Length: 341
Ligand SMILES: Nc1ncnc2c1ncn2[C@@H]1O[C@H](COP(=O)(O)OP(=O)(O)OP(=O)(O)O)[C@@H](O)[C@H]1O
Image (cartoon, rainbow, N blue to C red; front, side, top):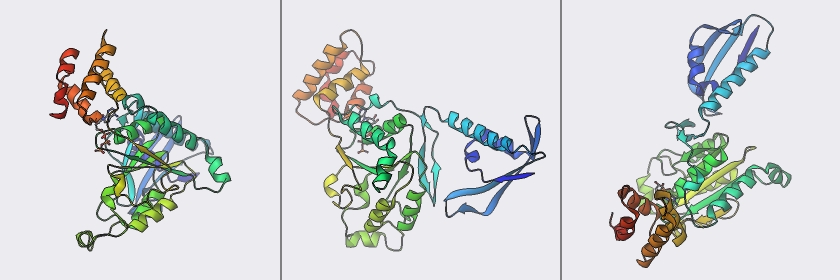
């Protein structure tokens, strides 16, 4: 009996790969012959995934065994990534995992102004748990988010933590990448990994307005690149039976063309701004504990606010790291340094 299956997810499991490298192996009491063939053109242009056939052949009538093997491999691969967030990036016409899966960042470790974190998380959870609401109304099952605000205030960190909380991976797309054409973008979005947040960072850097300046035109002469209308078409086309969440970030919302962020393309916009007094206090408590931590945190907050200057969580983090071993009193006294590091 011969059973042939195109096994994509085996490719992710290194243990199984080495298992399949041998010509024959034993599964329980059954000997299985294993043949791996990589097609000459290694890309399946339709699916955008490396195309490989693993053919398992065994004597007997037990088809169930093959399904058990697949399920075991799937479970092993899932276990490897338990508690981790996988990042993907676009390579050619496919998505590739980059770096090792990262330990999930707790969402509570990203301190945003009151209510923001909860609002976005609730929106995502509601979206994921309600596919029929969309299909019943003929609305594409996707949701767009825009996080905007000054640098170092937690946009990227929050998206990473959110993905961990939802058990999603992150697929990062760089729209400014030379050679990324409208077709390739469309293709990549349509085959983005399942259960993955698609992240378009610094969206303002790719498009300033609908019309390119003459300077931009000549800089890209001869190179494929994404056009603004191409991007809009791709965003509108991104629909899937899986929840498709797309996050965009920018430091300059005012530079974005209104067409890009209109409802339907961006459904939820959140400003992630400079630290509010309560954020300053919470950031302090993340780094210092002890008996008088609460009163120290209040004192620190008053002192920082008294400077009447904008401060980002990244600036505070840098300052606290500099004062890793300092006494809280010393930290409070030297907070002028926040803007000097
Ligand atoms: N709200 C926050 N709570 C906790 N840590 C934060 C927060 N904001 C920023 N940080 C820390 O500051 C660093 C930079 O943050 P991050 O990259 O998320 O900022 P960003 O808003 O995405 O910046 P940019 O706009 O430059 O991409 C990270 O190390 C992160 O841990």
